[in-house]
Image 1: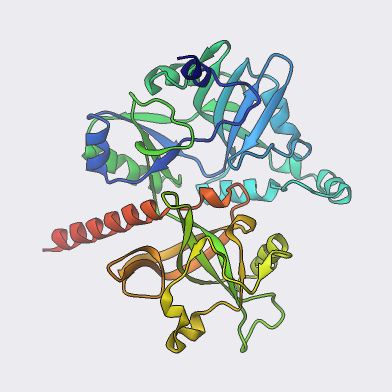
Image 2: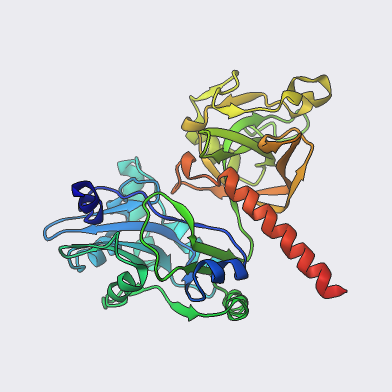
Length: 387
């Protein structure tokens, strides 16, 4: 009982592993949420966990690291105005659509370890005033002396909606009571230029570090956050780059292993160099033991798919990848491998390095399986509507 009470009242200053959204279709969401769901606008920014006590504060990024406060004086000024609380919020910028908003947030981003010279250049550039940021609160985990982890979302939401500070606003949310209304709302949200919606069960508790159907996200296209575990160097082009393609993997949180999803080109200007900067010093000729590789890579016919070098996942980076679609076939991948078939990507595009995610926050094998099922279900629906 004492342990449960301690968990219900989070300690200010100690990072709480974040609850994560899962995947489902519109009908499944309404059924799981018992006919009523909160559909929050999905803002395109960086997820933050803000801790405010009477005399100090801490702001954590999604990967549990503290925010580089020196780069965000506008955010620290906002946080200082909060009451005693622990809240989760999206760090966002103004913009005509979600892409322009996120581009501004990325423009402001500086990871930990920035040199004094670079920090001075950053501050003198005027970017802090030119690209102001603010917070959209979507969760309250503690308010004053009350812990809220064991409080249903509907009650937590009342507190979240009470924040009235310039620059800190509650996330926009709509109560939905049917699958048809939810589908219509998501389509309308996308047309308005937002990233999507996250549906939340009003009766749900906050489950640190868990991904359940209590939270489900709907986006225009779902990017995959995959771990770089292998490198390829082309003999024909890109001689001025450290490598031209990477082998990426999903994380199987049931086995603790990483399972390969496919080869992705990183020839976009500066991307290979950006990855190389983070993994340099960890590159090896040996296959990492915590990555599951296909036996086919040991055959001569698949030699061209064998990376020239490898990176241990725990020392690597998360790469955001968008794919035309997902396949489940006999191939040389190992993601969800069963009866000789595994998941892979059809034409994957590398988007960006996700500095705000750890490798264990990469897209999981179970998530890939659900996304594939939803893709096939949508395909059947489209075919049926044509008939």
